[in-house]
Length: 424
Image 1 (cartoon, one colour):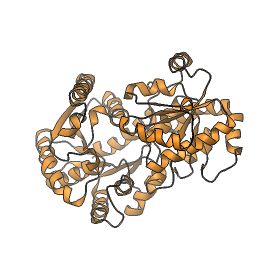
Image 2 (spheres, one colour):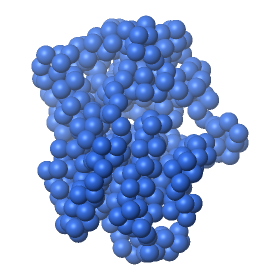
Image 3 (cartoon, one colour):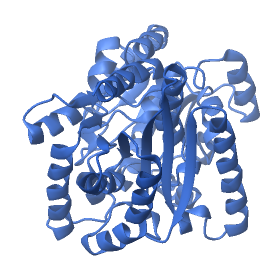
Image 4 (spheres, helix red, strand yellow):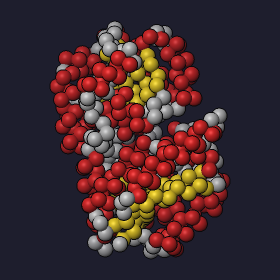
């Protein structure tokens, strides 16, 4: 039996649709195909992530149920999961580690990885994100385990967007140096889009060990269903509304205003429209409502729901169009967001900004939406085109998922990646 260790760090992995859908789902499919592989999923979770301040008892109980469900779901397969609490970092924002935090992170996390290395002797460590990759990179200095760098996003650029790093910060210089070292010494690299691949090629000067696996969607989780759509729209009292949906967090604070301003423009075209925001963070609801008020949007014209991860698929079914409106920022161009695949798999055409260079070429090639900059495209020609071709675009969503964004395609590529390691 060949062991492959899958590593995450500084993530609440037991309450993350991203982890479950983009990491665990593909690995489960591969484990069912390859009986000679055993996956060990090691997730290093800061102690404070096991609960939410203000609702410590309730959130701990909820997260306990999530961990139990994941363990039971994996327990009958050649797949074992370990949730290991660690003492550092404490704050979730510390996913982006500043230079003085790095030694504390290593002290709290690296010994655990070395212990698991000594027990399971994995052929390969697949590390998701830069903090986990840094641990795997250091482990390779002591052991023979190969190292697959699942990059997730460009760490320094996202850290600046999150307000943790400054452009002239010494932490940026440290992580840029570590990025080059990790990319150079990794035995394989996973990126999510062509622009992201170009970014890595610029470091390596070749693409021999890069695997492009877009954020994919499981068509058994996300799909159109007219009966569920009618029931959910009735429950939400929006039967006669044209619904624009935004799912997930907004990348920056400016993007919230951008999306709301665009909705105000859309209302001029379809007066009966409603803006539905599905977001996990309840703390940001007041701030979003404040922007709606400032933009003079009537309270009856928008809804904000804080769904559990498993509720998102049904809530998307009530929509007519999916919104992915991001302003130009450091990391925007590398993005094919998870929400893009979920919108399209549910049959929703997408409205996105031109800065999303990962998804824009696909939207245009398959004619599944429109690309617009709300602050520059003042006319309504594109919106009229979407409405005139709405049914065609809905039909085209099936093809783009099948050809480019399905979980099955992601599994095929990841399986080829593993085959290269196993053949060694």
